[in-house]
Image (cartoon, rainbow, N blue to C red; front, side, top):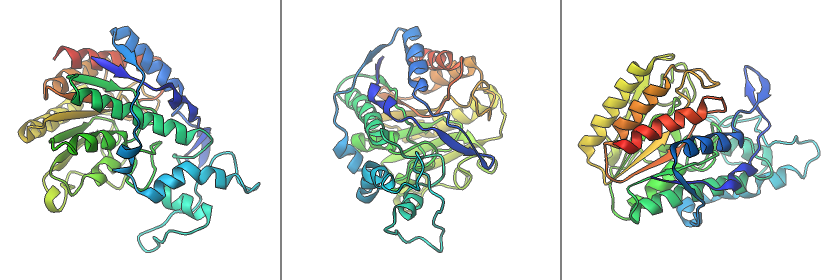
Amino acid sequence: MLAICDDRQAAHRPLTRLAGGGLAPNPEQPQRIELLKQGLSDCGIRLVSPTADSRDAIAAVHDADYLDFLENGFAEWKKSPANGPEMRASAHPTIRMNRKPIDILGRAGYFQADASCVLLDGTWEAVCASADTAVEGMTRVLNGENKAYSLCRPPGHHAYADKAGGFCYLNNTAIAAELAANQGLRIAIIDVDVHHGNGTQSIFYDRSDVMTLSVHGDPAHLYPYYSGYADEEGEGKGFGFNRNFPVPLLSDSEIYLAAVDRACETARKFSPDVLIVALGLDASSADPFACMNVDEDGFRRMGERLGKLCRKSLVVQEGGYPSPSLPGLLKSFLGGFTVS
């Protein structure tokens, strides 16, 4: 198995996030890269830098005005001395108010779905490097590698075509899937992050060539709250090609893996040419968010199940936040994934 990582991803260094009505340290830090690299080293997996240029692949998924906001919005934000060191929206549109304004604070609310996806100097460089990493992984799989792992950071599965959210800016998983779909291939995405892959679901919701499956904590009680329910099955040509498998919070490995088994069976019936695993390690009992109780052996068994599904597979890193357990969790998952 081959792994890809771009060190430019460390350029994004968010300071804070809103938690319980106050500002708290943001856990989506460059430290994640080093911890995940340690896990790769412990597995003996070769790590390479991407050479792919993902600009066209990004533009195939994301809205042009949104990309302009990500690239240039913070420079405009800094022109006002009244603005702080991070671009964070203080107003957001609703169903009844959804016009795109000119003012930068208004555009921040329009393009930032929540308060966790701040922009700073370095964000654009890092998110493009993260997308390059995903594109390189998919390119390698399409060109002969059977299995590859893209160490993407910042993550991507909460990003819509035109909105950032949940620490995510560019949807790396969707960008990789679109690259393969453009070659006429059938793609199955199985997202096992503890939070629902709402952005990925939205991007492919009316498509039948990309099946989106998400195992996650029950959104009635967990971010992103407003999507990820079992009755969301796609629309139009995509009806039946989106499935969600919500799991009660604080479930153990057996319960989480039972939902993964249901997702795997659904994907097996779809018979994909390529499988993309959107890998969150935040269902771990050791994760700082403490939403679920999956242990290291649970992640190993999860890897075994997913590794058997399809000859051509790409793992794209999503969540999983700094803790001493993070390297071991990745080692356990990839250990199971590669033996299948």
